[in-house]
Image 1 (tube, rainbow, N blue to C red):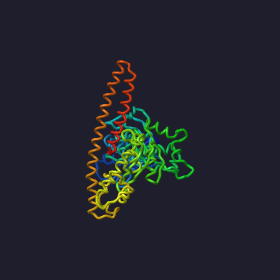
Image 2: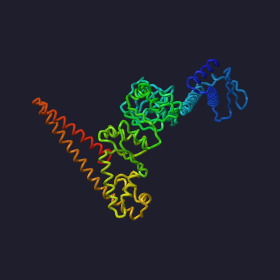
Image 3: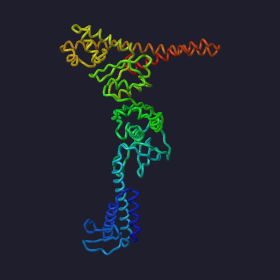
Image 4: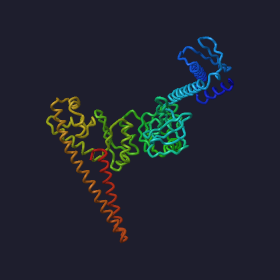
Length: 449
């Protein structure tokens, strides 16, 4: 047996597979004991011992404590096959343990791998010497990789499942963007800038609230970089996903206002009992505040931890007036009490209905019967308001359909006779139709009519 070659192979395996050399030597000794037991057809685990000199590669075997003058080559084919199988299994187990320990320490870190193939929607990626997978739920919607593509991802989880190690990767997890900022923005990695809150809809838009620990460092400016250089690298990595960076503030009102940018906020009313913020924006800012398919307000709500309702000044005023009239219709409830409810952020009959009698008893210092009467009255009024809102919504949708049909007709007539007046009229109607549809959509999202 060439001991020098054997030691060289052990060193190579230890280096390539990241396995401790001493562990491999122990495995080889155990495999030799298994081969000896097979050769002598014994089940006694203590009958044989084997020691390998890590320096010279010399093997020393004993049987019942006495030296066994027998070389491995003399064991025969069956015992040699046993040795081989035991060695392969031991090496595989060691490699699994090594991979598990290595990647367990790297959970939450960014890794760069190579795409291999898709299996049932999951992307298989080779990361270093291990095969990992990215479930469909952890992929960015619409993103596709080809075999051999470079994949930058987050090591999300490592699991020891039976005879294999499952390494779960992600590109849609919010922490992936946090780690990208740590790579691109040194101030974030050095904890000079802290990402205080974050909300993400992978592939579409992300909002981050950042704060600086150093008054001399502008948190937002540092994250964006000179001419947007830093943020551009992150956006490019995410294939164009929009990233809004807002300034963190301990004041919920200021934070909500910042989180709804680029929309301009006119007024914010907070109801701590419901965890709800009623935000008033001008009509021309409504679509900006809500965002495409409600995305802007939805992410702002997740970022701030508040349930956010967006209203126009007209809708807000109407809701407050209805609340005032309804609660004051109950005997013993005056304008001063209604003012207190409004100051607490209860700006509609829906809010009064939701907070319940117990809160009213505490805040208005009224008895249980009176509080219950106020809640019942507001609840009844809320049903009426909801029905009216539904009718208004249906009417707007009907009008939008009619306007669209009229516009299509005028455009067709204009195209036939070359009438500029017909096209102008159609464009005017289409503009009104779009606005009406937008209002209806906003009403649907907000449930405010």
